[in-house]
Length: 574
Image (cartoon, rainbow, N blue to C red):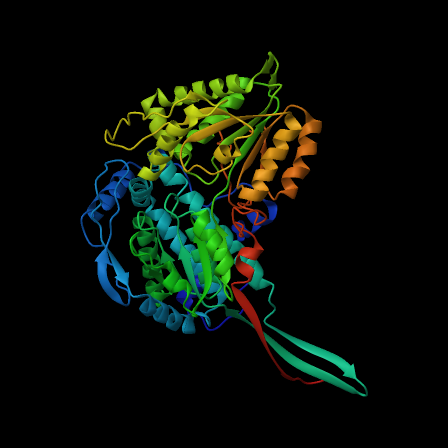
């Protein structure tokens, strides 16, 4: 990256820029080509990392238990923390510094006074250094994510580690592109009457203000890294507010961010941690402060939609949740298609924003090479594929992980009570726990599969934050697409799925999904999870339906986090 906007960076910072230059260049190339790329390995294999790192990471996590998480930041009033592991059902016993909001905001604003003058190349290099340091401690981070969110070990290592960091670096690539587009100075000349007027002009990138990053519980890092890095790269400070039941991963990330800033001579209060409790939430106190100018929110549709209605005069980026649907019109291989859907619905026990929930099947059945299969029989095939996962404890543990909170168990219990009494509903497969091979007390639950009529939208057209699959019979395939796209437009969708061997049907459906602002995957099978979203290539959330107003990542995600201020004065005429 060309070193522009230079403000007298010392040789150590010049070296830092050079250290991370190739990574940034490759990230920019990746977002422009949309090709597969990552600077990190996302497998925890000891063949890659050696035999010592996994044990060291676990030991580092265990050393945190039952102790204070020492984080030296302003305004500490007490120490709180109530996280409980979904695997052991035991409290982690970690307490975190709770700071007064006005103290953190004031410290962040003061830190920005110097940070906004720092060369953007340096700011981006600092963020890349943070990413590298976080990755170097990814075995510790994986344990932290497992024991607050319930993700399996492999998913916690990959999805909440390198895959999440890739999203953060993707945001840095767009930040670099956006700021590069601002020419730092220009000479402007034109005639006015008989006179030739010449002006020298300077254009300065100015950050918007302090940013608040509100993280979700089930995937605490995935949306946080892009927001944190986008803020810091564009000259803003980042106050990180983790969910009260999933603090540890973001506490580790903030700890590393602060160390990186301090090590390179910058104010660590550019990155701070705002913890709270479920009983005494604090987010609104930050949002209401005039100094907070950027809010990134990931979480419930209820609070997200409230913010979208009420936050004015500030930048707001949201990702909430969606009602992800599958339309199955025809297949080449019934088992292969059912397996792909069952695996994606079982991944992290459907506690993901991309998990499918509602499957639409035409009343004439799903066409297969062996003939058509009815909606209820398709539901039974899905149930059998879920059984195949659940019956192998090691496979189930690697895919399903654990249920983060009792709220998901409550959803299952409520459906068990409600569904059997409704005409036309058939529970094809009940949701039952599986025995985790390593954690006998783990909170687990396999997916419930139910066939429901199309007129019961009050059941299948609401997001169920639990492992649930509804198979819905529709009049025909076109109506199935209409149901799916209408739900996406009205309720929101982050990922949609379509299976058909009819190219004309697929082509006709694509425009409906596009008009609904719904990202669509067509006929995906095989070893890749159908709901896998690749940084640098897949746009995550469109901003065109109620699932969120922001996209990870595009230029819009970073470009408005700074503004441009110009100055001009007379120049010499030729």
